[in-house]
Length: 147
Image (cartoon, rainbow, N blue to C red; front, top):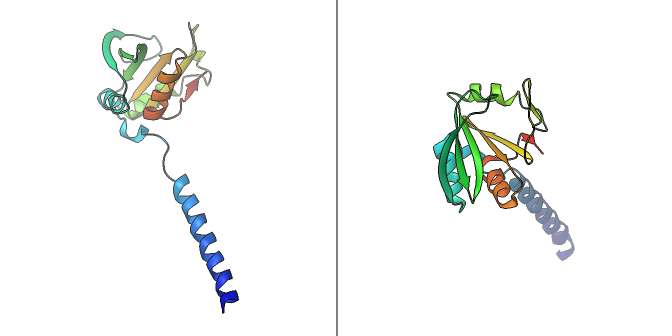
């Protein structure tokens, strides 16, 4: 009787483990679904423990809306909020994968550019601070363009 029970237990154990693996991989790794606009972006950064200060407005020739500079843990991050997600996606599609050009504009960055998008916003961080990059990836997901 014990010999017949062991294979059944092993089979049940294997099925249980394979189910656990599938459940773990279906969980999204980031909070980007909660970020829809500048306000929810700031809230997500605060919830992640970041220090944030509001700064001046900023314009980039290649983005339609005027942006805002936020100082996140001492680093400037630019946030551009659009009227709709479709408007944001249309402009995001113009950014080259390496961030070296946007549409017909060639850009010479002072540091590596990192472009993120979620909801109705594009976030641009020009720099290489690993803490800020980690925060942006946590709240926005993987960058869609940049270095």
